[in-house]
Length: 162
Image (tube, rainbow, N blue to C red; front, side, top):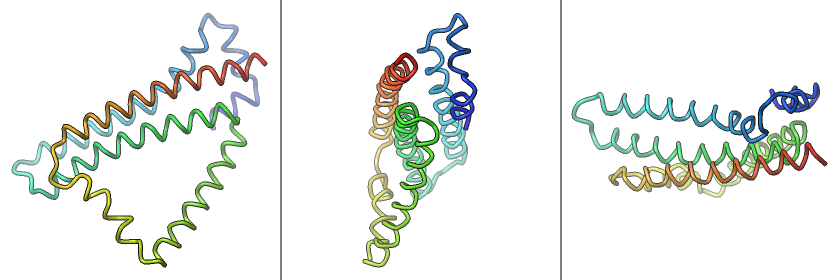
């Protein structure tokens, strides 16, 4: 990852020699996923809205897209926070362990007969509802992302200047 390369070759030391604040560097790293998610969500919403006479199933997909965007942005913020807290190498180990644990949890859920519930709770949350509460959830996700970015700046500053 880019963070691992910056850690290995002292990228932050180089950036510290430039007339940039650490907050600017971290905010730039946080901006990329936000811009990519905004572009993807806007494209998806445009595609849903450009089709005339949407059936209810497609309207629900639009709602799921908004709810997914809110969840993704919070997960991205948590990922950056963990990356800055534990470093790139340890963060990769956390991702591997979390991936294996979630896969095992999924296998257990399906064997216990919870598979239908796992895949049906999201459509139940979004089915036939107004998109306004999902837009509020998206704004809440962005607010949480902003708070996580502030925490990441503090963690990165502490790690760099220990």
